[in-house]
Length: 410
Image 1 (tube, rainbow, N blue to C red):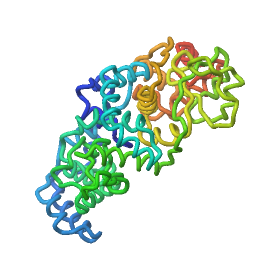
Image 2 (image 1 turned 90 degrees about the vertical axis):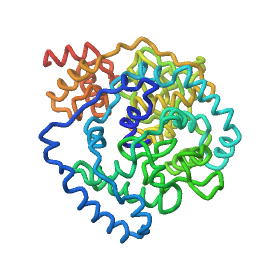
Image 3 (image 1 turned 90 degrees about the horizontal axis):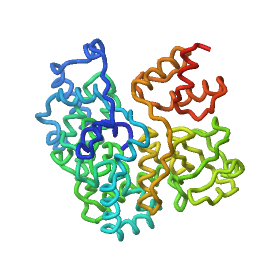
Image 4 (image 1 turned 180 degrees about the horizontal axis):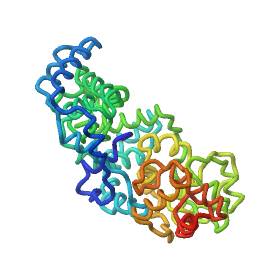
């Protein structure tokens, strides 16, 4: 979950074929040369051990977890080649919400039905939401990663890119061990130290994990009950509203104020109702004041959803990739009984075309972040702004018309 799940997907879900769903980037050789090599790692580790003991972690835990730990070049290599979602929503969601994964998810809903009902009663989070995340994160616990989490975290804590961030995670990983939840050898996962069936970062594990099965340990590696309840505990803490929707498929008319269709813009459902937005079954959207955003992951000609605070505040906190989050929300609706979505006829743009568009926007002074072919929040905002300027439907999605106008320099 959270920050590093793009890399985790590459590492832990090979059977799902996700390597095809990501575009790997790299940092320059010059940047890498500014980072320390392995020669100073032992000295740094010695100092960190002293710091951990000073912060109250037992010397026995520090020794068990950190004695003999070495610098891991494989962790650095994976960190330097982090994956980002480059596929469009239709392609990615077809791959992730496959027939097999839907069947597996429904089987888990039946198998853990009693637990899921009890968890929802206690935490307010519906079973389909939990099972969908469970399936996307680790294929229901089947692929949790095989790297030594403590070694990975120690390497990244010593490295130059985000050392303060990872030192917090490493310290909390030691606290998880010190509390008796896991042993160092049980803490295995992808390259950034996430652990368990929902891929919690150590700080999230330490703060939100619960012992749901009552065996005295918060075991998110081997206990499905602990894992499901802990995920629900985390989601509730982030502000989940019980009994409220997260994502609903809708049908949009041909004429809308498209510049209002963005996950960052919330309007009362009355706003969308007045423009003729309907549910999939043709029923009008209620003319009430429930806040919602019109989410068009592939523009006005693709799928359409009303996204509610549960989606905006929870799903995008879990993973800020709109493609992943929308897929997770859609998967949960399918597990809850919704039909397959209407995918529309939106054009598909390649990563190369998206990079070209990002460069053109960057030349106009827009901050689109890294030129990586991924239509993230900055790129979407820039697209919408230029669409408004050119009098094009401002649905925040690439179009050949926009590219032509940008190339013309008007």
